[in-house]
Length: 459
Ligand SMILES: *Cc1c(COP(=O)(O)O)cnc(C)c1O
Image 1 (cartoon, rainbow, N blue to C red):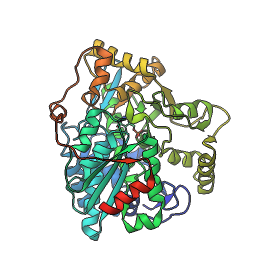
Image 2: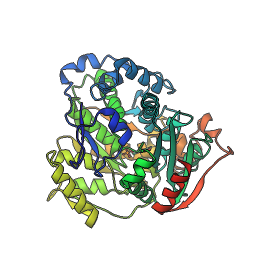
Image 3: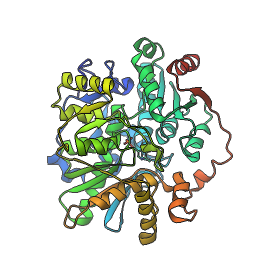
C-alpha cells in the first residue's frame, strides 16, 4: 500500500514513512492511494476478538511491517487496557454505547496512541533514528500521547496545552508524568493557538528535519487506522445482538479524526448506514454540513473541552474525497480557506453517502447526562453526552441500531457530572490518586518562536 498527500506534493510513501512524517511536506494530509474492500470477508471478521480484528484491518494498510511484528505490536498495545474486550458494547435504553475509555488515560485516544507509541519505538529501534514528537492537545491527546511514549527508547515528546483550559484531571494526567523524555508546555492561548504553533513548526522543513519532528496528533495516519478497528468491532456486536444488517453511528467530534476513521470503515465495506458527527456549541462542522459553507467562528469553552475546536485538521481528508480525489482542487480549497477563513463546499446542505451532522448545546448535554443516569443508572461523560443528545434528536422508529461512541470515562470530567446530577458520582481510584501528585510543566506565550526555542534546547 502506497500513500500520497491530499495536496499532491508527496507520493509513493510507505506506511512506515507516513508514521514518522505525520503532516505531508506540502502541508497536506496523507491518505492511502486505495481503500481495500473487505465486504466479502465480513462474516469471518465479525467473529474475531479485538486484537485479531485489529491485525486483519491494519495489515491491509501496514503491509511493510512483517505480520508477526504487527501482531506483537497490537497485542502489546491493547494489553494495557482494563477491559478484556478492549472496547465493550453496552446497551443503554434504546441506544448502544461503545466504551472506548478503558485505556491508561481513560479516553478513546489510547486506542490509537498506545499503538503509535509502540510503533515509534519499533521503527526507530530498526533504523537507529530518534524522534521528537510535538503535539497540541485540547486535553486528552496530550495525556494519551505522553502515556504512549513515556520511557520509550528513541522518542521524546513536547505537548502543548492551552493553559487553564483543560480540566484539572486532564492537566494532572500530563504534568504528573515525570519521565525525562516528557515535556509539558502550558501555552497562554486556545487549543487552536497550540495547533497553529505545531503546524508552524512542522512547516519549517529545515527545523523539522534538524530535530526529527514527529506527530501524534490525529493528522497521523496510523492513528486514524487504529481507530477504524473499533467501528468494525462495535458494528459487529450491535448487528449480532439485534439481527440488523446495518448500523448507525454517532460520534462526538472535535478534530474530525474519530469520525473520519468511521468514514474509512464505511468505505471499506462495513455496513454503516449513517455516520453522524456531533458537535457542541463549537459547531463549525455542523454548520458546514447544514449550510455547505465551512466558516471559522470564535472558540467558546464548554463542558466538553476536547471538542472546543474550530479548525478540524482531519476535515481536509474528507474534503479530498468529496472533491473527487483531485489534489489540485484540495490544495486550492485549503489555500482559499486559509486566506479567507471560509470555504464554500456546496450551495446548500452537503450530501455525503454516509456523513450527517448534529449538535447539542450545554443544556442538552447536561440533560443527557442526567436522564441517562436517572433512567439507566449509567454515567456518561460530557463528550459522550453531546453525541447521545444529538443521537436522540435524530433517531426515529424502525431505523438501524444506533451506536454512540463513548470517548471518555465520566471520572475525567467529574465537575460536569456534579453539575448535571447534583451528586459527586464519577470517580476512579487511578484518577483520584493523581490529586496532590508531583508535577512538572513549563509556561510559554502563544508564540511559535518561543516554542521552537524550547524544543531546540531540549530535543
Ligand atoms: C479528542 C476527543 C474528542 C474528539 O475527537 P476528534 O477525533 O478530535 O474528533 C471527543 N471526545 C473526547 C473525550 C476526546 O478526547
